[in-house]
Amino acid sequence: MFGSFSPAAMTEDSSTDSAPTGSRHPEFYTTTVIFLVEGCLFRVPREPLEEESTVFGDMFLLPQGDQVVVEGLSDENPIVLQGIDKGEFEPLLKVLLYRKHGRNPVLSLGQQQWISVLKLSTMWEFDGPRNAAIHHLDSLEPPIDPVEKVVLAMQYDIKEWLLPALLKLAQRPEPISIEEGRRIGFETTVKLAAVREKVTLGGPSSSSSYCYSCGRNYGNNSLIVGQTRDPATAQLDFSPVIQTTFDL
Image (cartoon, rainbow, N blue to C red; front, side):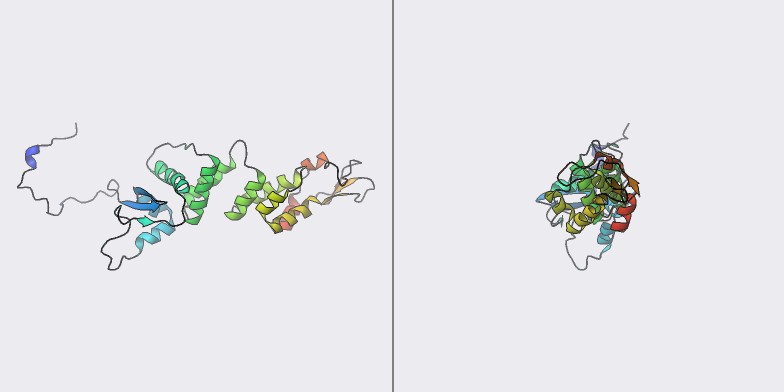
Protein backbone atom coordinates (compact mmCIF):
# COMPACT_ATOMS: atom_id res chain seq x y z
CA MET A 1 0.00 0.00 0.00
CA PHE A 2 2.77 2.39 0.92
CA GLY A 3 5.37 1.03 -1.55
CA SER A 4 8.27 -1.26 -0.85
CA PHE A 5 11.03 -0.60 1.64
CA SER A 6 14.05 -2.81 1.99
CA PRO A 7 16.31 -2.56 5.05
CA ALA A 8 19.05 -3.92 2.86
CA ALA A 9 18.96 -0.68 0.93
CA MET A 10 20.32 1.08 4.02
CA THR A 11 23.83 -0.32 4.06
CA GLU A 12 27.13 1.17 4.96
CA ASP A 13 27.70 1.70 1.23
CA SER A 14 24.84 4.24 1.18
CA SER A 15 26.20 7.76 1.12
CA THR A 16 24.44 9.81 3.77
CA ASP A 17 26.50 12.89 2.91
CA SER A 18 25.57 13.05 -0.74
CA ALA A 19 23.23 15.83 -1.90
CA PRO A 20 19.59 14.80 -2.53
CA THR A 21 18.75 14.23 -6.17
CA GLY A 22 14.98 14.86 -5.94
CA SER A 23 13.34 18.24 -6.41
CA ARG A 24 11.18 19.74 -3.69
CA HIS A 25 7.44 19.46 -4.22
CA PRO A 26 5.95 22.97 -4.59
CA GLU A 27 3.01 22.24 -2.22
CA PHE A 28 3.95 19.33 0.02
CA TYR A 29 7.41 20.36 1.12
CA THR A 30 6.71 22.53 4.12
CA THR A 31 9.15 25.03 5.54
CA THR A 32 8.70 25.65 9.26
CA VAL A 33 9.63 28.56 11.45
CA ILE A 34 10.11 28.63 15.23
CA PHE A 35 8.89 31.47 17.45
CA LEU A 36 9.50 32.12 21.13
CA VAL A 37 6.50 33.73 22.85
CA GLU A 38 6.49 34.20 26.62
CA GLY A 39 8.98 31.38 27.09
CA CYS A 40 6.99 28.96 24.87
CA LEU A 41 8.31 27.65 21.55
CA PHE A 42 5.94 27.46 18.56
CA ARG A 43 7.00 25.57 15.44
CA VAL A 44 4.58 26.30 12.60
CA PRO A 45 4.47 26.24 8.79
CA ARG A 46 5.96 29.39 7.38
CA GLU A 47 3.85 29.63 4.21
CA PRO A 48 0.56 30.90 5.69
CA LEU A 49 2.44 33.61 7.58
CA GLU A 50 4.29 35.01 4.60
CA GLU A 51 1.38 34.52 2.17
CA GLU A 52 -1.23 36.32 4.29
CA SER A 53 0.81 38.97 6.12
CA THR A 54 2.87 41.67 4.44
CA VAL A 55 4.71 42.15 7.74
CA PHE A 56 5.89 38.53 7.96
CA GLY A 57 6.36 38.33 4.20
CA ASP A 58 8.76 41.28 4.29
CA MET A 59 10.50 39.93 7.38
CA PHE A 60 11.25 36.58 5.73
CA LEU A 61 12.62 38.39 2.67
CA LEU A 62 15.16 40.35 4.69
CA PRO A 63 18.76 39.29 3.92
CA GLN A 64 20.46 37.45 6.76
CA GLY A 65 23.87 38.96 6.02
CA ASP A 66 26.84 37.04 7.37
CA GLN A 67 24.88 35.34 10.15
CA VAL A 68 26.04 31.79 10.73
CA VAL A 69 22.75 30.79 12.36
CA VAL A 70 19.48 32.06 10.90
CA GLU A 71 16.75 32.92 13.42
CA GLY A 72 13.68 30.71 13.42
CA LEU A 73 15.30 27.49 12.23
CA SER A 74 16.05 25.90 15.59
CA ASP A 75 14.83 25.80 19.17
CA GLU A 76 18.14 27.29 20.22
CA ASN A 77 17.73 30.34 17.97
CA PRO A 78 14.02 31.10 17.52
CA ILE A 79 12.42 34.32 16.35
CA VAL A 80 11.51 36.09 19.59
CA LEU A 81 8.18 37.93 19.53
CA GLN A 82 8.64 40.56 22.22
CA GLY A 83 5.59 41.97 23.97
CA ILE A 84 3.22 39.33 22.57
CA ASP A 85 0.99 37.31 24.88
CA LYS A 86 1.02 33.55 24.34
CA GLY A 87 -2.73 33.38 24.91
CA GLU A 88 -3.25 35.92 22.12
CA PHE A 89 -0.85 34.23 19.70
CA GLU A 90 -2.53 30.82 19.92
CA PRO A 91 -5.97 31.87 18.55
CA LEU A 92 -4.35 33.62 15.59
CA LEU A 93 -2.41 30.45 14.71
CA LYS A 94 -5.61 28.41 14.95
CA VAL A 95 -7.39 30.71 12.53
CA LEU A 96 -4.44 30.67 10.14
CA LEU A 97 -3.39 27.03 10.25
CA TYR A 98 -6.67 25.18 10.75
CA ARG A 99 -8.19 27.07 7.84
CA LYS A 100 -5.08 26.51 5.71
CA HIS A 101 -4.94 22.77 6.38
CA GLY A 102 -8.68 22.01 6.46
CA ARG A 103 -9.01 21.35 10.20
CA ASN A 104 -11.93 22.60 12.29
CA PRO A 105 -13.52 24.83 9.64
CA VAL A 106 -15.84 26.22 12.35
CA LEU A 107 -13.59 27.33 15.17
CA SER A 108 -15.11 27.45 18.64
CA LEU A 109 -13.32 30.58 19.79
CA GLY A 110 -14.79 32.82 22.46
CA GLN A 111 -15.18 36.59 22.37
CA GLN A 112 -11.82 37.33 24.01
CA GLN A 113 -10.02 34.95 21.67
CA TRP A 114 -11.54 36.62 18.61
CA ILE A 115 -10.50 39.98 20.04
CA SER A 116 -6.95 38.59 20.27
CA VAL A 117 -7.17 37.54 16.61
CA LEU A 118 -8.41 41.02 15.73
CA LYS A 119 -5.57 42.66 17.66
CA LEU A 120 -2.70 40.65 16.17
CA SER A 121 -4.12 40.39 12.66
CA THR A 122 -4.45 44.18 12.57
CA MET A 123 -0.93 44.64 13.95
CA TRP A 124 0.62 42.20 11.48
CA GLU A 125 -1.66 42.98 8.50
CA PHE A 126 -3.39 39.62 8.15
CA ASP A 127 -6.43 40.66 6.09
CA GLY A 128 -8.14 37.25 6.11
CA PRO A 129 -8.00 36.62 9.87
CA ARG A 130 -8.91 40.26 10.56
CA ASN A 131 -12.04 40.03 8.42
CA ALA A 132 -12.93 36.71 10.05
CA ALA A 133 -12.55 38.24 13.53
CA ILE A 134 -14.73 41.23 12.63
CA HIS A 135 -17.42 38.93 11.21
CA HIS A 136 -17.48 36.58 14.20
CA LEU A 137 -17.43 39.36 16.78
CA ASP A 138 -20.27 41.12 14.98
CA SER A 139 -22.44 37.99 15.00
CA LEU A 140 -21.92 36.81 18.59
CA GLU A 141 -24.94 35.94 20.73
CA PRO A 142 -25.49 37.69 23.03
CA PRO A 143 -24.09 40.69 21.13
CA ILE A 144 -21.03 42.56 22.32
CA ASP A 145 -21.79 45.46 24.64
CA PRO A 146 -21.94 48.71 22.57
CA VAL A 147 -19.29 50.37 24.77
CA GLU A 148 -16.92 47.49 24.00
CA LYS A 149 -17.76 47.83 20.31
CA VAL A 150 -16.95 51.53 20.34
CA VAL A 151 -13.61 50.81 22.05
CA LEU A 152 -12.72 48.08 19.54
CA ALA A 153 -13.90 50.12 16.57
CA MET A 154 -11.68 53.06 17.50
CA GLN A 155 -8.71 50.91 18.52
CA TYR A 156 -8.69 48.71 15.42
CA ASP A 157 -10.23 51.08 12.85
CA ILE A 158 -13.53 49.25 12.27
CA LYS A 159 -15.50 52.13 10.78
CA GLU A 160 -18.66 50.11 10.10
CA TRP A 161 -19.12 49.42 13.83
CA LEU A 162 -19.07 53.00 15.10
CA LEU A 163 -22.44 54.33 13.96
CA PRO A 164 -24.56 51.34 15.14
CA ALA A 165 -22.74 51.18 18.51
CA LEU A 166 -23.00 54.92 19.14
CA LEU A 167 -26.68 54.82 18.17
CA LYS A 168 -27.37 52.18 20.84
CA LEU A 169 -25.61 54.28 23.45
CA ALA A 170 -27.56 57.38 22.40
CA GLN A 171 -30.89 55.51 22.60
CA ARG A 172 -30.45 53.71 25.89
CA PRO A 173 -32.11 55.06 29.06
CA GLU A 174 -29.00 54.93 31.26
CA PRO A 175 -26.41 57.74 31.00
CA ILE A 176 -22.77 57.02 30.21
CA SER A 177 -21.08 55.97 33.45
CA ILE A 178 -17.74 57.27 34.65
CA GLU A 179 -16.07 53.92 33.93
CA GLU A 180 -17.57 53.77 30.44
CA GLY A 181 -16.37 57.32 29.86
CA ARG A 182 -12.84 56.28 30.80
CA ARG A 183 -12.99 53.41 28.33
CA ILE A 184 -14.27 55.34 25.31
CA GLY A 185 -12.27 58.49 26.09
CA PHE A 186 -13.11 62.04 27.12
CA GLU A 187 -13.76 63.43 23.64
CA THR A 188 -16.07 60.59 22.62
CA THR A 189 -17.95 60.85 25.92
CA VAL A 190 -18.55 64.59 25.49
CA LYS A 191 -19.69 64.19 21.90
CA LEU A 192 -22.01 61.34 22.83
CA ALA A 193 -23.49 63.38 25.67
CA ALA A 194 -24.16 66.18 23.18
CA VAL A 195 -25.96 63.71 20.90
CA ARG A 196 -28.09 62.38 23.76
CA GLU A 197 -29.06 65.92 24.74
CA LYS A 198 -30.60 66.54 21.33
CA VAL A 199 -33.78 65.31 23.00
CA THR A 200 -34.56 68.22 25.34
CA LEU A 201 -37.32 69.57 27.51
CA GLY A 202 -39.62 72.02 25.77
CA GLY A 203 -38.60 72.39 22.13
CA PRO A 204 -40.82 74.08 19.52
CA SER A 205 -44.00 72.88 21.22
CA SER A 206 -44.48 73.84 24.87
CA SER A 207 -44.60 71.09 27.53
CA SER A 208 -43.25 68.50 25.12
CA SER A 209 -40.10 66.53 24.42
CA TYR A 210 -38.54 67.42 21.09
CA CYS A 211 -35.90 65.47 19.17
CA TYR A 212 -33.70 67.89 17.28
CA SER A 213 -32.01 65.09 15.38
CA CYS A 214 -35.27 63.89 13.84
CA GLY A 215 -37.60 66.88 14.15
CA ARG A 216 -40.33 65.16 16.15
CA ASN A 217 -42.38 66.03 19.25
CA TYR A 218 -43.10 63.45 21.94
CA GLY A 219 -46.05 64.91 23.80
CA ASN A 220 -46.11 65.65 27.49
CA ASN A 221 -43.70 62.90 28.56
CA SER A 222 -41.00 65.52 29.00
CA LEU A 223 -37.48 64.76 30.08
CA ILE A 224 -36.98 66.12 33.58
CA VAL A 225 -33.69 66.23 35.46
CA GLY A 226 -33.53 63.50 38.09
CA GLN A 227 -36.21 61.32 36.49
CA THR A 228 -35.98 58.33 34.18
CA ARG A 229 -35.36 59.19 30.57
CA ASP A 230 -38.39 59.08 28.30
CA PRO A 231 -38.69 55.46 27.00
CA ALA A 232 -39.65 56.86 23.60
CA THR A 233 -36.02 57.86 23.00
CA ALA A 234 -35.13 54.18 22.57
CA GLN A 235 -36.97 54.31 19.24
CA LEU A 236 -35.42 57.54 17.97
CA ASP A 237 -32.95 57.57 15.11
CA PHE A 238 -30.00 59.70 16.20
CA SER A 239 -27.98 58.60 13.15
CA PRO A 240 -27.91 61.98 11.35
CA VAL A 241 -26.67 63.91 14.37
CA ILE A 242 -24.18 61.14 15.25
CA GLN A 243 -22.75 61.28 11.73
CA THR A 244 -22.42 65.05 11.97
CA THR A 245 -20.99 65.12 15.49
CA PHE A 246 -18.47 62.32 14.91
CA ASP A 247 -17.74 63.17 11.26
CA LEU A 248 -18.71 59.69 10.07
